[in-house]
Length: 98
Image 1 (cartoon, helix red, strand yellow):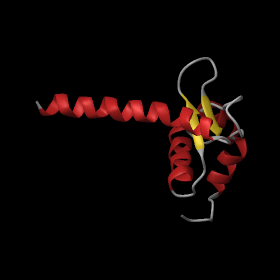
Image 2 (cartoon, rainbow, N blue to C red; image 1 turned 180 degrees about the vertical axis):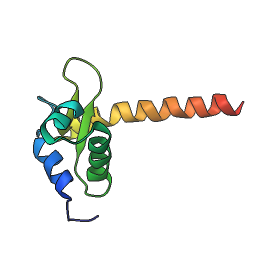
Image 3 (cartoon, one colour; image 1 turned 45 degrees about the horizontal axis):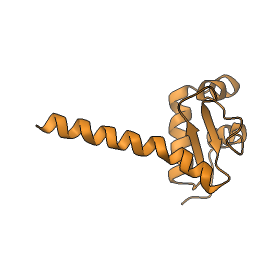
């Protein structure tokens, strides 16, 4: 895990709220930083994987977007859709291999 953040990562991280109550959408981060959505998503992924930030995302409902998980419950909420996506992808792989 590297401790040095890039300028883009610092910009993005500064905009992601702590806690699940007011998540921010990638499009909102893009509007505030001038970065494209793909770059934002790549940087968020790197912040999670390589920097150890507990950034979650809400993918359904009215309040969608990214947040910094501050509790175990928020981490569970962030993990659930990722597990569902993995399960769906595994089903697709199995179906393609038949």
